[in-house]
Length: 331
Image 1 (cartoon, rainbow, N blue to C red):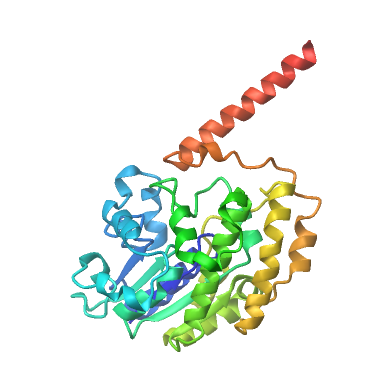
Image 2 (image 1 turned 60 degrees about the horizontal axis):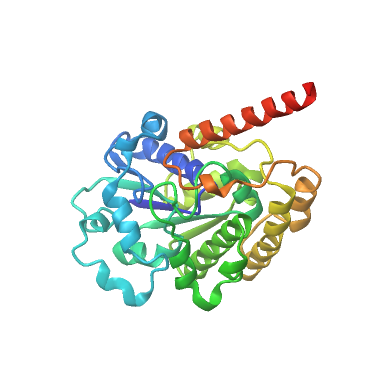
């Protein structure tokens, strides 16, 4: 049994990955494989229960050079004519139905929404879970954490993102601010994933707001989908299962206003694909309006190699600004 969790970062993918791990523990004990975002992280180091591998995050030695190479070599949006790139690819064989291990496999992939066709080609029998979430909450959550376009680790994906989307892109690159670029990424990646999933009977689509509104019901639906009895332990894990949590509003007023049109597109997209959701543009607007008091992101730091280094730089900038204000007051 293989279960692959898809979704852009900050869409509840870690939460769902942990839930499936808990279900696998109930059914298989410790005898299953785990893969956590292999296009960045060393899949050998991260082959374990999420809580047990947390110490590996943020370390240079934990990064997968092979994974980054494969990410850069593969199209962001995998089409039917790209299947020749799969032949003889040992990295991708790890996800195939014919891999040597007979153990069940759960994987989380946040750089593969446009590549679901590829993973279905590799593994026709795997169960896919697609997490989708509205762009405003996603970019609020990702701000200062990492870049969807990968500048933390490699040259930006943004040029090829635009090139591969071609006529489907909404915001012309010349007019794309940080908020617009990232909101477009979330919307477009969800769109292509939903277009695939709508015609794939082995994919379960879960909209984040709907799932969070009733996690016990959502967990039961997931267990039913993957064919595992939903025990109280699994339900308890669903109520407690979270990845890194965003508890505050990080967006500036400008960033929020630039991202809001994509929330409207998200709502219409959910309706088009008949995705059950409790999200509404009015709800998200009422939550953010008047509360977006943070400065615009300083994109000159987007290429720093670690989140920790970025935090140090930003903290020092804030301290310098505080000292300057103090000096100005005394003058």
